[in-house]
Image (cartoon, rainbow, N blue to C red; front, side, top):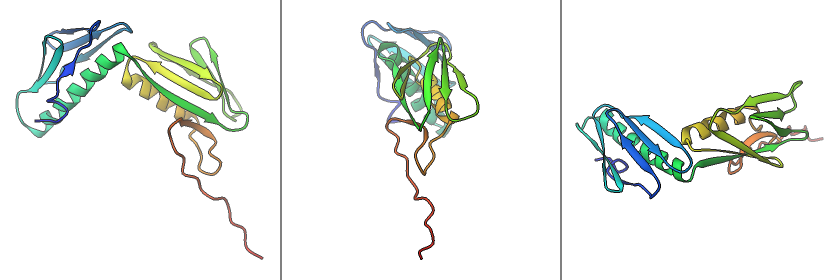
Length: 179
């Protein structure tokens, strides 16, 4: 039995879970998320807990068992608390500004980079820190990764966009010939 898959998911008050034939819908105070169920995986709700079980014990199904439980748990967590990631912009003249639902980055290129935020994702800008938040863990992580990819941090001066808790391994510059 999967260690992740066998633990039940506790559904907090204010969250409703609907289990249809092949779709699980979780709705709460922050919004609604839905996920398809995987083959050979059974999801059932007992009182205020969701239990995920598998039909057969093949390696691929065992892997999907834990994945399905984690996805449902992330949906429950997302509609109650939401998820967020923080990005830090480092560099002389590097800036970010909000333009409606877009983010306008000045990253040292000859042009400004405009990033359109998808629906369900919000960005909060405080100085050189951008906080990406939303109810879908996958979507928040994807948007944060796409923004970081606009200008990855370089190892010499650390200029670029990085996660707040990320540690950049620095390199020393050229060592001149000793005279």
